[in-house]
Length: 386
Length: 215
Image 1: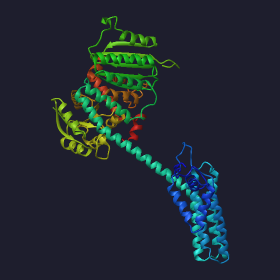
Image 2: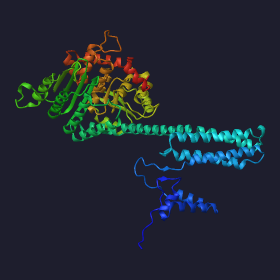
Image 3: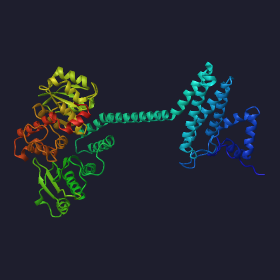
Image 4: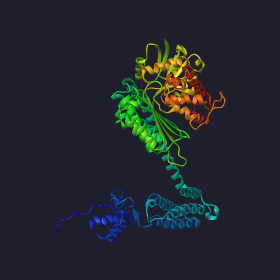
């Protein structure tokens, strides 16, 4: 004979009521019907069976879910059965009240069964696939109706003159019935309120963090850049960090999608990382789609400015109804196109040639107070993709 | 010597700035929050106040609140806003309260000194970004132009040119050279734009001002 370990005591996900008997049967290797008989027998003979049942219900775990849709389901419609028994108890209670006998025990049983049905319905049937929404609403409505109608009938018992205790019980039942009917609405409102409050707290926390970072870290980064000078390695690192932090802090407040201004800012940030320069992009006018040739030419001009001039580079983008203008201004020694060696393709090919091929124009001229200014212009094509 | 008061809640920044400013500037005091700033301005009456846009204390209004509470002194004390913020809205808030200009905290000591000198001389100081915002807010890019000189809601052709050059990174001197006008004329135009920025009721300006409870 070989020794095998008994399967762990767990409750299956497809269960009748709570899966206790089925789990116990698998664990012990008995037949399920035998287990059920034993439990019922123990219950009848002194009540140990029901205690065992509740104990195992509370402490035996349910099998692991096999997938996201693998909800626990219970084949026995417990809520409906409780409701049926509650109705029987209600009939008994009303009858007893009308024949001048004490209806209290029957009333208590009615309340327990009706309330139990609704509680079961709210607790377990909600996530159960084999219970339709209609079934859930029906159980709740019948539960409410059962309690309310029993209460009213008790009030009217014995020619509308019930004794004091019966009257109190009856009113209590009506109140509970109405509460049961209103319960789902109240629960939903409460859940929404909690969710809304949690969302607001999160939003406030985020705003607080943003404000704090804005006041502390950004200030320090600005100071570092200020003290280190625009051309130093430290200032470049500080500026890159400042940019990243800003992007994170104010994420979602800017325009969505890749428009020209965003694209130019991205290019400027990349150039700042590689060269000792500070590229400031100012954009005005309506957002325009990023034009490949224009961005490439502007990138080349910014690269030239950063590489040969360094320091402060100003980029100004203007999107007017007539066309798009980009100005790239540096404060370097300046260049003279006429004396530039023929093999220097940067300006001639990558800026001027590229712009004219795209149907625009580019001029390179000395700036008013020294340095160089590159002006790129592109006409707005009527209905085109400029 | 120009006597200035530095208002910033970061002591590191205040001392850094103090060390960087040139000889022509005399720091008469420092303040770290709205209430002490208002008190210092009233007792010291500095020529220029270097004012951080974001400040603790008071009713939470930051730099703009300092200016509004010192409104009685506006003809003697001039305010220059300092900010790490990139958003023009933050800055225009203090400008509308009465500041004469705005520079970023990334500016060097020499730049700050020059800006202080212009503000002390009664001129306005615009950064490229603020000029870009002005062009947008007054619809100048879209082609709107003032017909009469006293029109508050639109820029004149000349003002638009000046703003465009400032947005392109030109200094006043360079703007003057480019447009063949004197520096004094450039300063007049910039001051006129500043006045429009402070007084205009253009929709774009009032909308966010209302949003930020500045009006």
